[in-house]
Length: 459
Image (cartoon, rainbow, N blue to C red; front, side):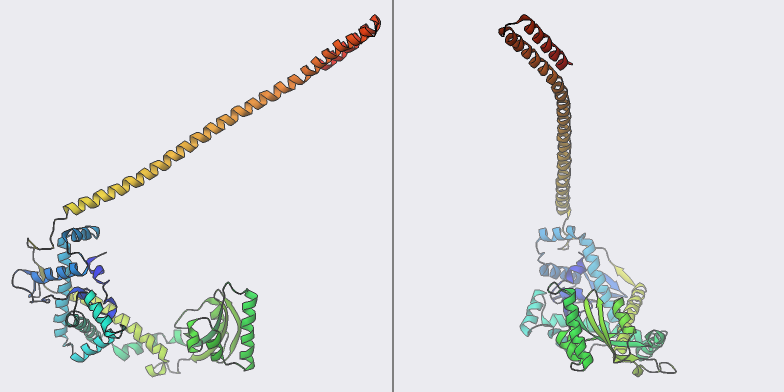
């Protein structure tokens, strides 16, 4: 955030001041030759800017920004990339510009009248809810109404009037109505056939299905087509956007950009015709054309031949052009000025040693880096541990798999062995049984049979 950028954030930013940096200029001795006796900070075409003027400006800035202590001031400068030298340079350049505006105004016979001041002040106060609110904003900006007039209103009006004078003197491009007409003539072909459009928008939302929304729009369209509901009334009652307040008017198609589906519908309509339902990403529209502009035969010869909206557009474009032209002009005017900025004297109250604040900022940055590095290293260690655990699990899984395989093989070998054992047991039992029944031959036969069964089981 730069020094001037910070100033722009004050409570009176919205009052339309061109030189918003003036908002903290309350209590200053003024630019140019004003200020306490002493050192001269700079000269602009021989006109002095006093060192005290610059010092007072910085002092008021610090008060308004709650930077009155050296600690707060030092931290602010370091965090925003400033040094006392660069702060001084920026304030001097601000005053250089103010002096140049005044000098140029004198060359162009531009003056600020009391009526101009009163009108600007009234416009500014109208932006606030009450006089008390306006005064509170002044206080918040460390200003009084008198200093606001002197440091904001007058310079603003001066620059505006100077810009107008410079534009009027620009004979190459012309100015005023002549320049606007010339631009209109250049755009005549583009504007020819422009259509003014109104619509009724039925906006899609989560409360209705697409079919329900289309049915609602169709019911209104049917009333419009039947003549029981005017288009303007339909827009006022049903349109979901702000155009409802103007009977659905959304302006000229040549001065704005409509989505493709909407523009296609406009292209197919004549003045007074009403479209069917037009679906876009916004919902469903009913569209009508209320007017059409055609360039007169023989071309444009007067701005009075244009609709008011086209005149306003030209005025806006002219103001933008004048502003850019004035900026270019002032840059050249400044480059041609004799500007001398003197060396910075010692002992200025805002010129504090930034070393401790720079070191503190460096330490803080290093701490942040270490914290971030520690986080990264922690993440890496966690990842490594997870990988190691994954490898261990995989190894255990492999071992288990091998064990299962060995177990399977053992089980296969055990089964026939058990059958063999069972056969042997059967043999002994058969022999006993056969012997008990009393017959050696029978026992012998039983023994032979059981032995055969045992051999078969073992095979």
